[in-house]
Amino acid sequence: MKCGVRFCGGCNPRYNRREALNEIESRFKDIDFVNALVGVPHDLLLVIGGCTNCCAAYEQFDTKTDVMKMWDVDHIDMIEKQIKEKIK
Amino acid sequence: MLMTGAQYIESLRKMKTRVYMFGELVENWVDHPIIRPSIDCVAMTYDLAHDPEYADLMTATSNLTGETVNRFCHLHQSTDDLRKKVKMQRLLGQKTASCFQRCVGMDAFNAVFSTTYEIDQKYGTAYHENFKNFMIEVQNNDWIVDGAMTDPKGDRGLAPSAQRDPDLFMHIVERREDGIVVCGAKAHQTGTINSPWHIIMPTQAMREEDADYAVSFATPSDADGIYMIYGRQSCDTRKLEEGADLDLGNQKFGGQEALVVFDHVFIPNKYIFMAGEFDFAGMMVERFAGYHRQSYGGCKVGVGDVLIGAAALAAEYNGAQKASHIKDKLIEMIHLNETLYCCGIACSAEGYPTAAGNYQIDLLLANVCKQNVTRFPYDITRLAEDIAGGLMVTMPSQADFKSDVVCGKNGETVAEICDKFFSGSPACTTEERMRVLRLIENMCLGSAAVGYRTESLHGAGSPQAQRIMIQRQGNLAAKKELAKAICGITK
Ligand SMILES: Cc1cc2nc3c(=O)[nH]c(=O)nc-3n(C[C@H](O)[C@H](O)[C@H](O)COP(=O)(O)OP(=O)(O)OC[C@H]3O[C@@H](n4cnc5c(N)ncnc54)[C@H](O)[C@@H]3O)c2cc1C
Image (cartoon, rainbow over all chains, first blue to last red; front, top):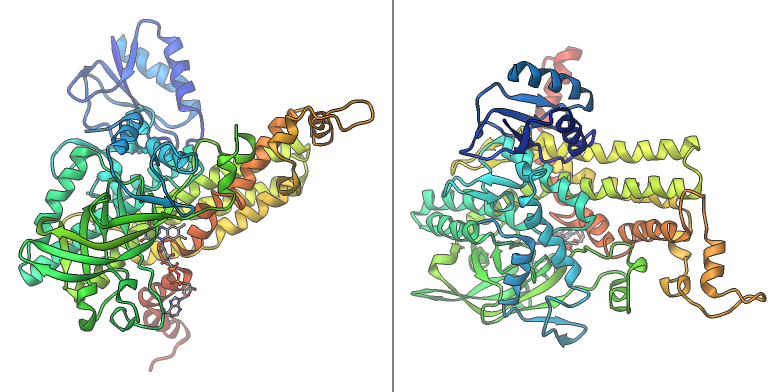
């Protein structure tokens, strides 16, 4: 299973977005977290914003399920829950 | 096409750009130790576009070709694009702590795109088509282009055509069937040598008698008749010292400015965007300046982020980080820096579509942004110098910290004595303390201060230029009516 990841550009992030992704990845050994690509189908799509604005564009990516968005390090548990729901 | 930084640097080697420095022609300017950090700085604008962590800011979809392009080559299609421009600039400032030189071109693209459209509407010229075709070339080649506006200007009290030397303002000296010939120069040009192309714009609004000075065009930087004389920066020759590292503060990156001379340069018709339509010179200047005043709400903020981080480290290395006034000064620096960012974001969010379709910033808010930029970096550097302590300007050189010359009675070397007397808290080595203090020096009064301080003051127009725009846009009459309505004045 593939989860496309789209980062915002990180101009003023309030937490380490890469480390947050590493933490999420560590909780799902069977999911392949890849950089989201246009024209490639993704099972899941995760948008990682650095602040509440979460400004990354993601409409250009295909996903089989609703987009998941996070903009705070405290959202890691929420994203874990959402992924579990979606892959049930 | 999206070039990598390495491809960009290789592309420069093909240029025949003529560069003079310290009175000599520079043969291999790509590898010159004074110039190279500025080239590496531009290279970051290419490399980050390939990094998935930053691609959302660094790239956009071209309205001209539908292709993914570097955002520095993009014509803004929405207020979202305008905001992302500012965010991208902040990011680059953070990554380079210097002027990364690619904004002037982006601001010129957007100003010339919309102005040429309106010139054509009035005069039936074909400048907009010329410019669109040029833009497609820019995007397809991922070029950095120098946005060249500022003329040397000679006697500031005189109009261009009244100067004792006509070349003090760029002007047309010959009109031919196939193009024009121009003479003049552009001063203070950021990234000029590092840019394979230039876009020339008039420096100010023009009157009818100055019609030959109302000229805008694009030209390759190595065209016949063009040459550059390098602008020296504070502490620049430190870069020539053998093994230069610690004393530079920022060994990797730097900015670049130069005088660009145009000695009878031929411009073919297809690269001409204005040639005598003096009534549109003011529009082009105002739009370029507007975008560029917005830009500073991003790039200077990113550099400020680095300086604030350096000051916080210096406080830790001095062992003073727990003092309440130090904490408060760091808060003040953040407050000032984020205020600039607020202005950059606000003038972007309030942007609007031009007749040509690309988006322009809110002019009043962009001028307020730049007016703050003429002040706050000075306040921020003052606070950084306060926190750093005097050592940032009195510290011995890298050579002393590495010297094995014996100077002490017990056989201590100069390096050992420096290490002993310049040590700070146990949180750092003496070398680490020296590194961060040199970085602060570099940004506050060394070569990066060119970009962080004086460019903040004069770049995109001196403070008075913004005050004139604020006065024009501020609508005092409406404010007086508000006051009258509240206090019961009816006349
Ligand atoms: C680091 C740096 C990078 C730059 N990069 C670029 C670039 O890439 N492209 C570009 O085109 N330009 C660039 N500039 C130029 C910048 O836009 C100019 O410095 C700015 O417009 C001011 O012009 P000036 O330096 O000639 O100063 P001046 O115009 O001489 O101004 C000096 C002072 O005199 C005042 N003054 C000037 N004329 C008058 C007058 N007629 N009446 C009353 N007061 C007057 C000004 O308000 C100011 O206080 C850069 C400048 C710097 C410092």
